[in-house]
Length: 407
Image (cartoon, rainbow, N blue to C red):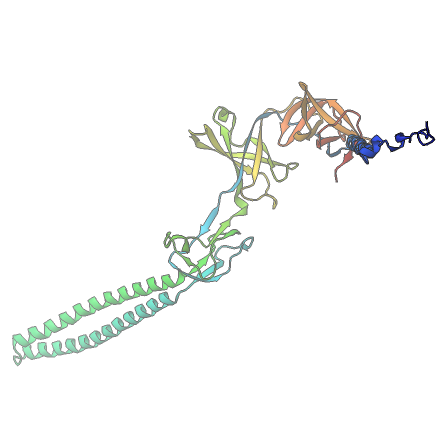
């Protein structure tokens, strides 16, 4: 064998391609995906823990005490209504030239509210006065002619008695006097008719001023300067039928609908307690004024009118109100009763409970309830006067959990 043939064969293993070189960056990509997934899990876990650890915010109210009261026979709801309420309108059709009334303004009886264009009415007044004066002037002329005719009649009578004048001349003089007297009587009636037309025209002028029929407060301004107003609806939506609405605030009372099944329990003079929806903590003493002697067949109710024992500026027309009718029998013993807002009372697994806020924690308590007083609930056991009860924010509350008062 020659020396060339004895040379060692070359090592081809160095030319092998590594698997990592066939898929460049493949291992690092999987590592990145794993890191992203782990990061998301950590973020979700942290958010969940943060939400679970968040302190709930609640609204609270203090439990109040009231003295013993008469038992409640029934409850009803209604509205504050005035007995004297008027939408003041013009008696004639005209254009508003001046509007003095405005919402919230206090007015007295006879106070000027608005004026209408009275140019046409004043023209008619001037024409009526002229006709009356012309008729009066004609009456004066007739009276002068009558005086002359009466003198002529006396002369004719004297001449006729002396045989100088004929009977025909005497009859003519007498006829002239009687005719003038008749014409004067007719003209006097025409003068009176003219005076009546003047009074009517003057009334038309006065009708162009609108005044308050009674003392009260303007609650609605129904017309503006430049608009047409009319006592009847005319001209579609371009003609107003009212000037302003006035309410006598001293005549405010309550109107409620009582189910006809319970109307026998309601008597005039019965004491009631009214609670306005706008002031749920304010209990207003009142009494039944009258029971309207008719029923509503659609609702099966009877209207009852209730008078406030004392009026207050906070009481406004059309406010919603809830009324509690009390028995005339006095309670056997007077004792303090704890009341809390009805919104604080909850039903949980068949039990009546409240959440009490104390030392920055909430505590679940079972309570025994009594009657309802407007928006308040009587608590016979479970809550003491002065305890703070949760009225809002009950979601996910747990007994003994920390909580914050919502500001």
